[in-house]
Image (cartoon, rainbow, N blue to C red; front, side, top):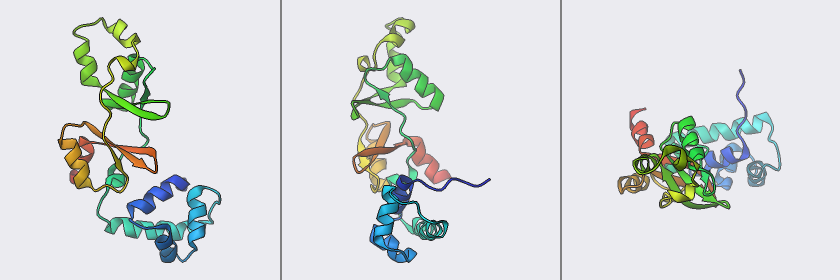
Length: 189
């Protein structure tokens, strides 16, 4: 079975994980910087031989680079809108095996919702009524946001300071999420 080639976004993330600029990648792969830029923007589909050169360079570089947030984050970011029901949030958590979700509204991060908060609220309210309420009813502070290049050491500090998750940003877009188990798994695997 042949795997799908990486998307332009995935190539950009891999390049950043490797700690390379477009110019540095181009030089190491023996292609032009403008071609790298066009490939990453999605305006041109590279030939297989060009893609192979790029991936070989990235593979070599990533294995040598100090790990960053981008190297351990999970994709995609599973989230819920502020106006969705708590029932929808619970369904997303259950389906994806996660215990918290970032909350967005009009494409802006506005908070988070966590399973422990929902569970505590069940002591006070009927489950059917609670699940019908909007996420805004139980919204908590948003998770911290770091850049894709942020060191794992800094991500660890944020998670140990009480946040259950850290979101990873790349040029204004949330591209990944890191939880405590991701840090633990990094050391085990």
